[in-house]
Length: 329
Image 1 (cartoon, rainbow, N blue to C red):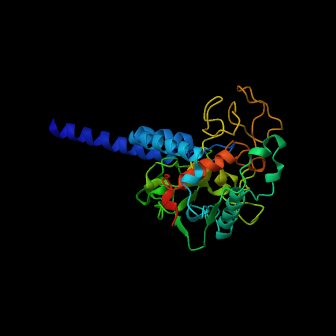
Image 2: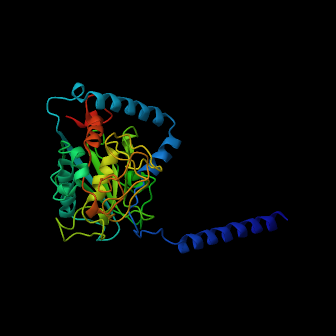
Image 3: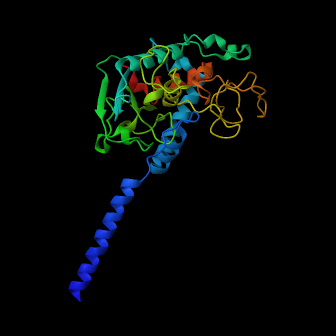
């Protein structure tokens, strides 16, 4: 009887193993089709807050400091208030197209420097109702050289938003000097996501910004790259780096929500595509939405400005006593 029972058990295990292999082999790949802008920063933050209860306290302290900075910025600034920010790029690729070139990376750095200095050519497209609150030069200079890149071949067809791409133990690439350097990851993201960022206050071991490889860089600046139409002007990185500097989505991730910035109008919700101006709002006290703001969900060609309030909020992160003060030498 024991021998019969043993054979039966072995048969069940072999059958289960075969079924498991069959399921793994036939499981469909996650979709990487892009239908509209989709940023996962808010969802990733909620997952991090659930996994680490102490994160909420740190973020509350960051908000309290930000409020003090907004009230009196000069009390926290240093003499040279331009941040020269080193950038490290981590490229994960399965195909040649995913292994984006240094020229494509440089085109992205160029876009970031233009957008954060308000020297982008479409900055002056801002409607007159909003020109009085435009950011001007935010005083962040992104510094990258061709030696500041790590490339790694992978067998993964796509990456999810669980930060695996940031961990060598899971096939990704660990960040380089994350307390003093902005790390960017370029990879093939699953589920139609263009990118996501980690807000200030999270672990340094996962700190940085992740961008879909085909939304990384600018077709206009380097036509020889690999791009997806509609998101080929480098604005996904501008949006996600905004999150990394503590900006929220302009609609506050809620109907007529709060993005913690005083000079941005309330939005009903995210806007997609290229809304015609004026795009009216039903939120209290907000007749027109700022759909051209980088922190909305519009197409790359239709977002081209930050506000002064957003600039101040970002500057608070690297001011003396701020959550990213270590970025300064």
